[in-house]
Image (tube, rainbow, N blue to C red):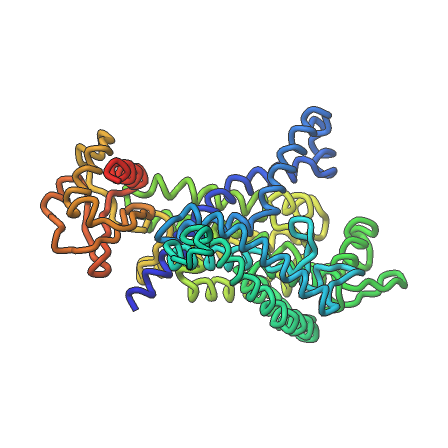
Length: 519
């Protein structure tokens, strides 16, 4: 059980690397996307200046490139975080595995005649990824590739083959084995995927129910975030009968988005058809606005308040950036992923409570479009739009803020959830750490652990060194305490945790360098 818990924590930590990249890039994406919209240029004419427009367009294109390849970031991040042996070959193998996974699923779709050639491919769970049409497994595909690569790296990094195949032994075998495993996964995954997509489509009758609709659509949307399938779900509501069929001025609109566009941009708030807006917006951005503008700040504040005192500064930058990324760019994964995998029960509760807010907005007659939940959309399509009843979002949002804040604060402390800033006890204020004498610390650590020959894999999380050892009887705890560490723990007989606080990464680098000199 302890080993399983250690693996879950390791997996959660492995997600922090891609999340750390997503947060600031998402912030840039949100700002650049907002400042290049026609309605924003009409509001702030200087944004239409060719030079200014070029700058924001360029930033948006760069940011789009990063976000268009998020699965690769997760593949590399998971491989790096989960691998205990050669992390470099694990990262390399994860990229190869991800590419093979994509092309294998494409081949399966083509061979089975299920490659969509007409209409919206997103509705069928497919997407263009790296120039190929394949299943839209999104982040899940990257995580699968990363886990496979980490497993292959640890298990086969020292594989010996017959002389005739000796060239492919050891580390060279890792990417080949990773690719082989993902071929098998790529052939199996689409078989189940098609039934999953069909199941989602079959829910259309329930989705149009006045009570079950907002509850089910909101909850399923959040549950699909870990798998990247929320895009499929959203597309189904926007463009198929699952989102309803509406007749406006004698014309039939399938899905809520086209009907919303007609009313919002052509007929306007004075139209008799504006009464349809609450029916349409219950699937749209107003629910996300509560989440990004009120719920996320509440969760972020709870995380910050529960962080250990000396870790607060370190945690604040990640939390604040993640909250702003959601409010400005409608990118929610950076914050959600900080607790999704390490506290899944809390995530489910978070999703369930959110559905109550969606239900409240619907029955209050809220009519705020559009499809993104940013603060910009709230102002443009809510505050500046007549008869939108945007104040309902504020009312539900404020109530949600307090509910989520106290829930998360209690849950994190009660169950010791390792959210940012709570990874370990903070490091003691000592001379070696304060003066950043990492080389001296590294020499003490290595000597105290019984020398280089007694040390296996060296890793670190947010605040502690995690080291595999051969013989724990050789460890000199008194000497180890002189390194300035704040604590020593033994999760297993051959694995030690040494707490150094937020500067642990620099200690780990110094330990690696010192071990390299003895290699």
